Image (cartoon, rainbow, N blue to C red):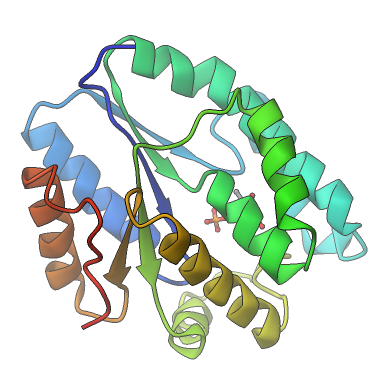
Amino acid sequence: MKPDAKFISFEGIDGCGKSTLLDRLCAWLDESRIPHIRTREPGGTFLGESIRRLLLDPAYHMMDAWAEVFLYTASRAQLVREVIKPALQDGVWVVADRFIDATLAYQGYGRRLDVQRLRQIQAWASDDLWPDHTVLLDCDVHVALERLHDRLEVADRMELQQVSFHQRVRQGYLELAQAEPQRFVILNGEKPLTEVVQDLLTLFWHPHCHRSRQVAAQ
Ligand code: TMP
């Protein structure tokens, strides 16, 4: 793997504004001529996109929580070996719309499955690959759900979960970030987008300055 290829994941509850932030980051990487790819999970490969349709289809409202884990994990295993690892080996940055932390937060905290066991499965399925940096776009659950409501798209199976589920997921992400401050950065998803983008670019312009620091919800 070339040393300058960064693997950065973006996490947050549904409606936190992650996709718009990723659009801006990728535009900035384009302008800066930094070779990069953007991935999403579940999905990002031909197989993964089929798995995504299963996972998000409200028709599968009866899906067992462990079945859910293995579907997300299957999509990730394919993405890691087909896309992420080859890109990093070629010196291409990987900007990931969700990665392992999503399983820990959604299935571990949201579904209340054993987080240690989930970590073991993920390490095995993803060759113990972890992002260099993880950006958590933190946002109040009610603000996020209102944004989803305004979007006019039909809600998917995960978005249809109860408010208490989304609250556990948010809490889970915050606990994961607090446990690994050297990898995580927390940005305030309730701030105006231009300010969040500025916070993010400041971090990547000064790549060392965010170690052990959180650009917290001020
Ligand atoms: P997206 O809306 O960010 O594309 O993500 C799809 C949904 O899947 C979102 O509700 C988060 C959820 N999810 C999990 O529950 N576990 C996972 O491992 C991943 C990657 C996503």
